[in-house]
Amino acid sequence: MKCIKSKYFRKVLLLTAIFLISCDKNPKQPWIEKCIIYKDSSYQIPLDTILLFEKDSNFVKRNGYYKIYNSDIINNYSIGKIKNRKKVGLWKLYYKDALSAEEHYNDKGEFDGFVIQYDPSNGNFLSVYHFNNGEQVGIQKEYYLNNILAQVYTLDKNDQYRDKFVCYNTKGKIIYKEDFGKEGTGYYKKYNNDTIIREGKYLKGKRVGIHVQKEYFQSHYPLIENTFYNQKGGFYKVKLFGNLKAVIQTKGDSIVYDYTKNKTRKITFLKEKIIENAVYNDTVIF
Image (cartoon, rainbow, N blue to C red; front, side, top):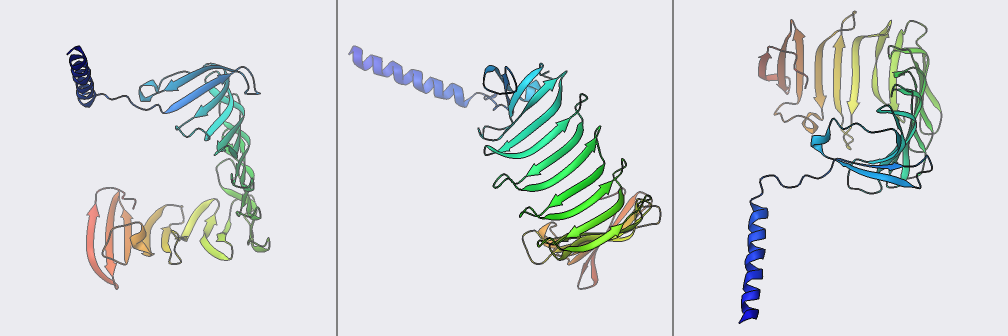
């Protein structure tokens, strides 16, 4: 009889626990950041582990060498030094335990020096960007997946093109060259191998005329975006056509956005006939 009672009470306790858990209005939330603090830059001797949750948004990290996880995937993390609440020096980012980026910071926690992205599957370069006290300036390099240069260009402190701009195809052959000079005037093109995916004119660092952008979305049929700029660099019209349904739910085959006096007129076309004409009291970005 005691055995039966014992089993009965264990069953009651189990059902009660399940009921309480199911009624918990505040279930335990997963952590959003895991920090392991190490003795030095060898990252061999851990000193402490801290789990941060959404409520810990104001948490102040103490000085030290950190390995930081932003998810529960144990082989995705970054390592580097924190000083006075900011990232300083060299930080390395890893994806599936393979190096995916290197970032250099100054004492203010700003990018300073090279920021390099790698293909974690083989270690090839994806991009080599240069920063000075938080501003992307100087010679910038972008690569195809096979470690061959795709673009080399120069930016000034206002993020505008200067001097030589060179594009290559996947065989390393130069397919376009421009010189934006000291004032940032020239014609911009960006290629994916031999296919132009972006182009447009710059006048003294400002976009003017029509700028064209093509997005393929894993399809041979691109979405084409034409943006119209005035001589002061302000855009006043955008036209979308091509693979429109890849990004917008619509019955049309093209859409035009006209921007005037803080209002947007959105006109949808189907076979060159207007099927929708709407006006919004704001600048609507598709």
